[in-house]
Amino acid sequence: MSLRLEVALPGTTLSEAYFSCRYACLREPLGFPEGAERLEDDNEAIHAWWETDEGDVVAVGRIHRIPDDSDGSQSDHAGPDAAVCPAFTPLSEGTSELRPAVQIRQMGTLTDWRRQGLASGIVIALEGAAVAHWGAKSGWLQARTDAISMYSGEDWILFGEEYDVKGIGPHLSMWKMLDGEDSD
Image (cartoon, rainbow, N blue to C red; front, side, top):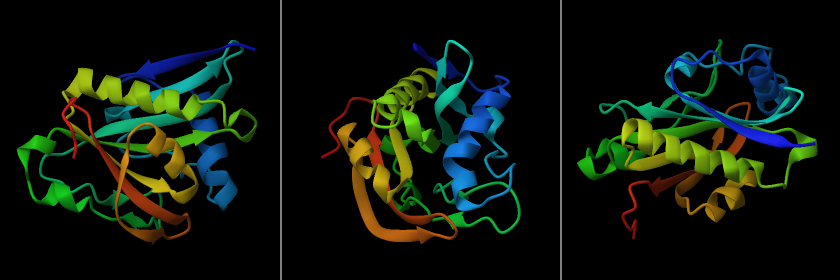
């Protein structure tokens, strides 16, 4: 079965297959109700996904621009009782070298499709689209601990202490310069 990688810029209407995959990967296993996979700013984000020839979506991810006056803290999901993900403290220092800043969220791969490089392909596509569309200089994310090795393999750097996102589990924050400059 062949797959194709799709990328959609802000304003694109996303298929129900995209959201079904996101729910199946990220929210259903944690007991969240349907709808928790949708975010208020999905229409403003860039999305990428792997799709089969039959139209089944098997892996998803999204990236959004962090407003210039924001440190990146936000609700983890739509709906009541959503946990608030912590700020990316380097962004609160206001250095222009980090702006425009973007955040990857809602990355997931269906169980039968894992360990095939699909998530890495999505990360690479999202980074490239964010640089091309917004001129992104830095990327930020909050990684579930089991995803850290995949992000590290794409040169994302850990920072800060481990924290728990209520109802989701342990996470670590990561970042990456996207404009080609050395981050050391």
